[in-house]
Length: 218
Image 1 (cartoon, rainbow, N blue to C red):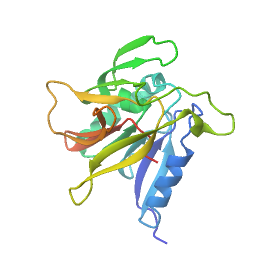
Image 2 (tube, helix red, strand yellow; image 1 turned 60 degrees about the horizontal axis):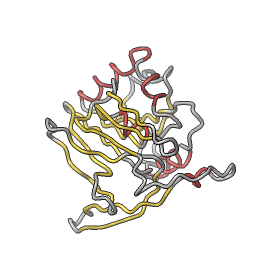
Image 3 (tube, rainbow, N blue to C red; image 1 turned 120 degrees about the vertical axis):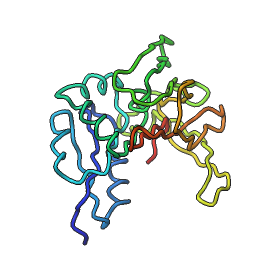
Image 4 (cartoon, rainbow, N blue to C red; image 1 turned 90 degrees about the vertical axis):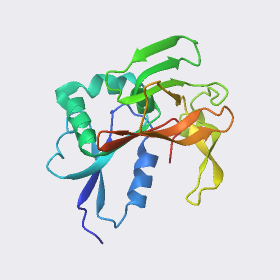
């Protein structure tokens, strides 16, 4: 067994969101590679700064506002932004996919109320919007199965051999994306098949990279 030498930091908002599956997948993917998946929160976010951190994973949360409330605390976002510019990679899913963009529009699927946000923790030159009811249908949560609130969506992307491929992923109120006029140094990784809108993207920020995904990737 390889002794962990590098760390990927997995952020926990303490909101009770379903993150265990993604955490388990990451542990399985990086098993015996020398890479440790370490869970951090707003209080321990900078505790690994003297270790070999490869990057960050920000999973979905029950409310996107939690990220905007927590990350600015204790200088966490300033530290994170500097780490990205130095060369770290960050994966931002669902709620943090919205917040990773400099602006976004969230439309409550039940009340239809619109929330236009200029995200103070957004670094991507993109606008996020959603949930798109052509992709996501609100379903009441089953108390014994958190996956009941997700819809299955098809996304298309280029495989390693360059050919077009498609696969189904879970989506729960996650965003679609469109680039701002000033956006550069970005790559569209996947589109939603039904709408042709961007589902997953990455943009180089300084020496680092930020990835944003609407669907849950586990």
